[in-house]
Image 1: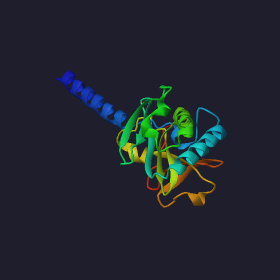
Image 2 (image 1 turned 90 degrees about the vertical axis):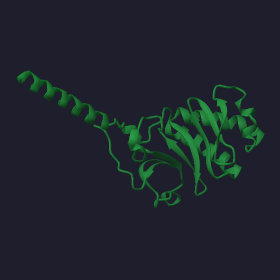
Image 3 (image 1 turned 90 degrees about the horizontal axis):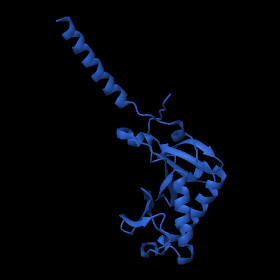
Image 4 (image 1 turned 180 degrees about the vertical axis):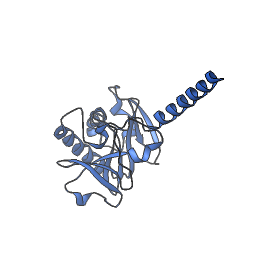
Length: 188
């Protein structure tokens, strides 16, 4: 009788442990700080170059995304069109890149690949400002919206929509943002 009681307690303890440990996600400190693979100043220059290319297109909303080393482009209907692998040396010749001047397409693909290597895997336009999704590759489970992070290149805080975002970190003209109502938490 006593061993059955101990077994039940052990099973209940095991279940409780699993439930609580699964609910605690690891939130690396890098999610709340600007940390790139390359030098932040060099990344800032590349973001500024990409911004110039993107703004020239006159497009709004989603511009591009990279998932599993594949480049996706907005096909002007707000839907993603897969262009192909970033390793494809002729990717810049894809017809879906026609919204970018032909002399700049190769540079666009280079910049998208470079920014992706530095944890910036997607670019949207919000209020005519390019905004990059930061560290989307870190698993977030059901806490997705609290852990979304964005990077923008801005000359000052006044260029950032602080009614929708809060600033978590800054490096010169680069700002790391979270949604205004996001709960900011970190792991120990």
